[in-house]
Length: 473
Image (cartoon, rainbow, N blue to C red; front, side, top):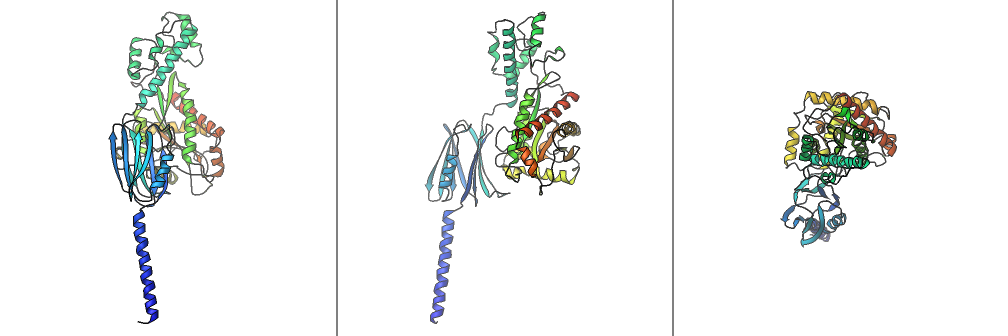
């Protein structure tokens, strides 16, 4: 073997040693964290750790005081996890504090102190869209308030305050009226009032039934509507569903506007209009499937509307396409027999993929419930949904351009509540630069909310809600 062969062999051995050393180092350091995020909400708090490789975890829960510990393998995790701790806000409804510690050479422990008993879900998500591997910690409160009771409680409180104002105008003592301002059982209180005619069944219930001047005075107060002198008002509930949220930004405009942000703003403005409205004497209430920036799975959105016994379901979105040319608003209803156009089918497929981006724990029963809803929708629901969509389109065209002049249909997963008329509104094409600008303005958001509100009112004027056990006094 000559000198040149010896030199080549030595270089080859050095290169092999370097490869081995790099391999050992790569194995030792594990996955690298590329981003950490936290999404606080009353419904639940989500923590997300995004990395370039799959993270292995082991969780331990302690009930008293409530605490969750998660051991995460990977030597490079300590500093990024500290960033997650820094993102925690003091007003988080579920997390009291977080701390991180190096347990061993390749294990970091994240300890989460909780404000209340929590049912945690810890799971991994495979790479999808712009995301790499994600470790997700969903912290669900064990004791969840009943949203229907909350809506009824709000109405009862308003009526108690209204009774007090009316009584003060008439010079009547109201010492006993305030006791029901925050009832323990709003639904039971509601039924008891209706049956007995106790305070709250009329804004001036402390006055005798034969006191004509008293009832006349109450009627003259602004905002009071005794429709045909009925003694009860049917509470009309509209579920508003701002699309996407949290981990799922939805479509993103050329200037960086996120769909999840603008549709939430429109929903909040529409909520305020609905809450200030009566239709044929019946007060309306809006219920939001999300009122902040957090992710809600498609099936859970439907379940939320059913839980409050909603009379309508309106899902709000901002369309996007591959090119900036398309523009205008659209309204969609459900179809169980295929889409009415290729564009409607494409739109439904895109919106139905939201769960993949937002991140759903497929091991939970929610996924099974969601699948069970697929074939339950009724022809009557679809027929009423098309009526609602038509009323909305008639108003929306007055404030902006329509992409299609009629209600389109496709198999949107979020429209599959079998007993609730449901529509999906694409407010504009966020991929169009001009429409993206308009979506960001308060004027356009207000005009759009006003148009949708008028469409909802027109629908109820022509299609009164069915009588149910839920009533407000």
